[in-house]
Length: 216
Image (cartoon, rainbow, N blue to C red; front, top):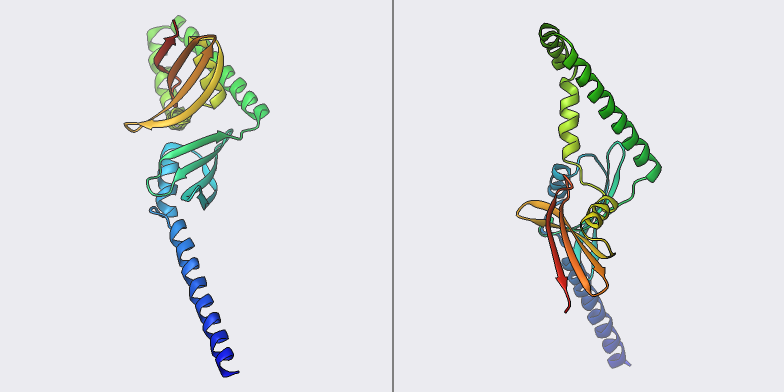
C-alpha cells in the first residue's frame, strides 16, 4: 500500500515539473526581440496615423506583431517580424466610400490651386509678391500636412492599377517589401505565356522596374 502511494506522488510531481517545462518552452517561443514601444516607433515613423491596436502573437512557430493604424481617411493592418520589425504583410481596411470622398476633395483642392495659379499669372508683379507673403503665412500649417501625406503608403489597389498600365494581364501576386530602407510593391502579372514583374515605390507610386519574361 505504501509503495502505491509513493509511486502516485512521484507521478504527480513529474507531471508538475513537465507542465512547468512546457509553460516556459511556450513562453520562450513567444518572446519578442523588440518591445512594443520600439515597434510603435518604427510603425509611426513610416505610416502617419494613430495606432489603434498592437498585439504580440505566435504565427508558424514565430512571434509577430499585429498592428492596426488609422489616419484621417485610411486604415491599415500590419504584420511585422518581432525580432527585426520588418513588415511581412500589409492590408488596407479603409472604407472605400470614405477614400473616394477624400480623393474627390483632394482633386477639387488641386483644381482650385491650379485656377488660383492661373489667376495669379494675370496679376501684376507687385500684387504677386504681396499675395505670396500672405499665402506663406496662411499656408504654414498646410505645408506640414502636405509633407505628411507624402509619407502615406499607396493602397494595394492603386499599386495594381499602376502595374497594369505597364503590362496588362492577370495579377498573380502582390508583395510589399523593404529594400535598402525603401518600401516597394512587387506586382506579378501573367498574360498567356508571358510573365511580368513590376516594382513600384510604395509611397510615390513611381514605377521602378518592369521585368517581362516571354516563353518561346
